[in-house]
Length: 288
Image (tube, rainbow, N blue to C red; front, side, top):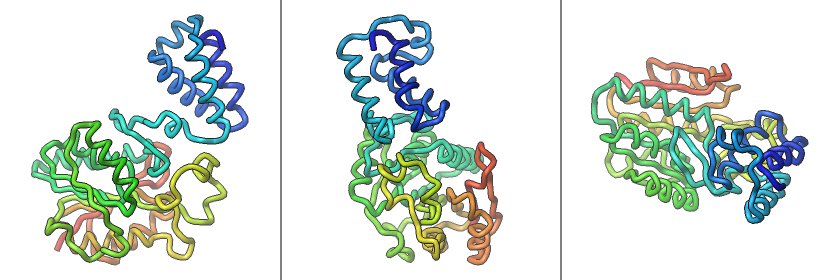
């Protein structure tokens, strides 16, 4: 690879058997921009610019790693979520665009309420949800829990990276569904828990199956709503009056998730679709 254009072509050729064209475009521009420290627009404008030997070698090394199916975010060790930078390792899920939509929904509602929010994120992973909420709702008191100590280490680093204060706690929600964390009652509880069933694994891309943490992804076919049930029970005990519960959900279990919340007495339940038109988010209110 001698020029920027050579590198763009090389990514196309090397990855065409692994990813579709839109994914290849996203990967190659992200990677080359990162290595050359140029914007996507600059890459196009300076396609004939020559690469240094070091740049060419680094891009070749990244391409080799990509051909194994390893996600580019793990190779680079970072990603962007809601316009903010986040470190990512194989200990945490890579933040996804549909989760940005969930965060956008929460921020919008929180700003309408005009009150001091106390927020808890359950199963925080990289910390992308609570850190973003704290960034855009700076007066909120934000906490987050996860079962994984390694994930919490990454999340704490991301809070420092984004210069926000989030209280991180190691908790297994399946074993602590009835407890009150530090005697706090929350105005908002949010979770993007594991929701992909074992039978859905065959539909998933190899880069997810081979590299992302299964602990944060999968549930059994016979009890796919195990986390939603536990978190809803926790919310019944730990939400304030008129508090809100938000979930990211399995697109195939929208009606089942709504019914679970209805059966527990939650009100004003909303099922919302993501940008692709699939059931992806639920909000519910705890009222008497």
